[in-house]
Structures are given as C-alpha cells and as structure tokens.
Image (cartoon, rainbow, N blue to C red; front, side):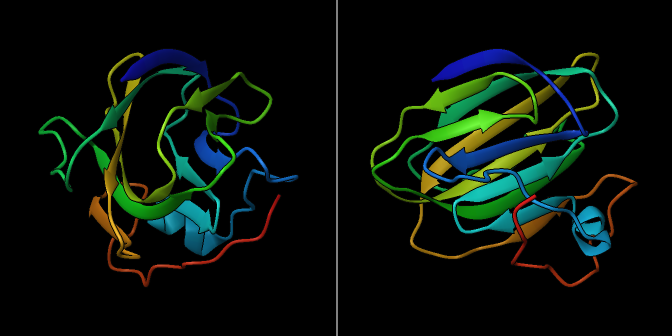
Length: 152
C-alpha cells in the first residue's frame, strides 16, 4: 500500500485521527508494560530506542498473523472516520493513510533490525479486539490490558 522512513522521537510510532487536537497519548507504567497506549482515535506503539524506522502500511481482507521475524506484535481496534488517519512520531513527519471509512483491526509489528522495520496492517473488523501477540523483553504480556489513555 505505502511505505516510508520515519524519524522516531520518544521511542514511539503513532496512528491517529487527523481531527484530534491532541493526537499523541500519555503513557502510564501499565501502558509501557503492554507496549502501547490506546484511546478512541489514537494509538501509540512503543519501540526500542531507535532514531528511525521503515514503516510499511498494509491492507488485508481479514485478520493476519504476525510475520515470523516480528519481535513485537499487538492488535488494537481503530476507526477511520471522515477525517484522515495519520502515522507519525512526536515532532516528526506525518503520513496520511488512505483507507475507506469504517472499523478496522490494526496489527502492529516491529523487528529489531537496523533500521527497525514497522508493519501496520489494517483489516476490516467490527470487534474491539486488543491483544499482545508477541512481547519483547521490555513488555509484560501477562499484565491486564489497559484500554484507555489520556492525551499527552
């Protein structure tokens, strides 16, 4: 669908509704343990300490499994409304995602290659599914998933 290089600040990549005044999320210790911070219209995924990533945007017709080389993989719900969805990092470039309006599942995958690779796969879904599929050493996959965050 689309791919680009993205400078990373504060060790996170975010996907958010362009209509949000404050699109980035605050992180609590519980968010750090699960590897993401989510609220309606915005999700931020934790990355290892890297300066840049290569991002690949994908669209699937149904839920897909993580790639075999993924070191982190998380699924969250996201809704595309009348405004655009944006991929970015704090104080970095922002990239528009072209999707039809509707509800999607979003599979985030990250490798620890140099530079790190991030895949964001959108698939149609009416479920509000949250799951940590692959946890890196910094994450605690056994912790209860926090399904709310405040704007940063």
